[in-house]
Image (cartoon, rainbow, N blue to C red; front, top):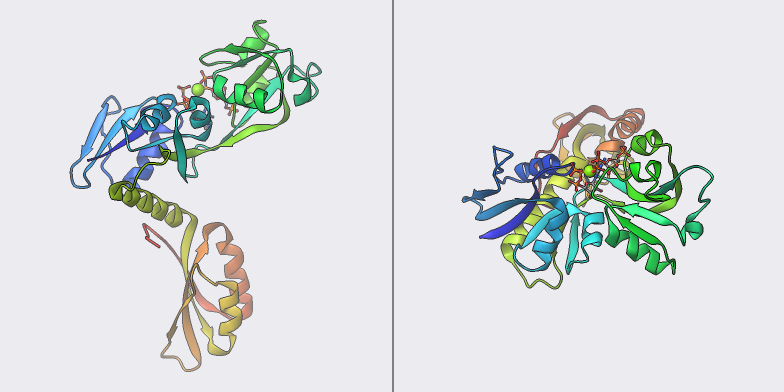
Length: 281
Ligand SMILES: Nc1ncnc2c1ncn2[C@@H]1O[C@H](COP(=O)(O)OP(=O)(O)OP(=O)(O)O)[C@@H](O)[C@H]1O
Ligand SMILES: O=P(O)(O)OC[C@H]1O[C@H](OP(=O)(O)OP(=O)(O)O)[C@H](O)[C@@H]1O
Ligand SMILES: [Mg+2]
């Protein structure tokens, strides 16, 4: 059986389970369950703290795991990112009281509070900076107000928590994170793991693309196909109506309305958009 780690709670838990469901895997019904066996697919899911997942996968005790890129870096575990799952996006940033630290170069010598000491130490080492790392578990933004630190290094999503704490972002993000699938570094071939990755890639494509179909006069086919090249190539079928063809192509969801306007202006008609449920490219 393939053994896979899934976040048990926090920001990544529900979207991770949802994505696995869309890929055809069974997920736990009760959020208190620690394990869920999917007999049909021969996969066993283990629900773990996202912070611990890279450790389990890096040690080889589990084959794959869903966690955050920042958590993987923080763990220092011998696991690697094999797929960006495109949810749980956040930046990891420094912040301080306005007017105290102008940019990253001034971080040296300060007390920096974080729940991600691995990420912070890596940054300080790479930039030749020495600072006092104050390790906290959460609500890190309070550390400045309470006088425990001068700077925080933390996950920033909307920035609302920083604003509420009267802190201002310093410089560029240390890293950009999202949910990822991790695997032990140099793991040897594992067909069930490869199959899971292919299924998840299919979900990503099904989320990102829609199927566009339209009718167009044959004489305009080249120009229409140039607008909708699809992933490989558009499918072109004859129509009963003389001089017209039907075209089918996958199009990025974000581009579809602009694409429909352009096709309509070109002379295409009966332009239809269909959602994809799943796909394997
Ligand atoms: N708004 C957010 N707050 C916290 N983490 C976020 C956010 N958006 C995305 N993430 C990502 O979620 C992961 C952290 O998840 P984790 O479960 O450890 O913390 P959490 O979601 O804040 O939950 P909790 O603090 O309740 O334990 C990281 O990879 C982080 O980048
Ligand atoms: O930029 P924002 O949208 O405000 O989100 C980022 C904040 O959310 C998380 O905190 P959480 O509420 O999970 O509390 P924690 O610090 O105890 O983990 C994170 O640690 C930041 O503090
Ligand atoms: Mg949190």
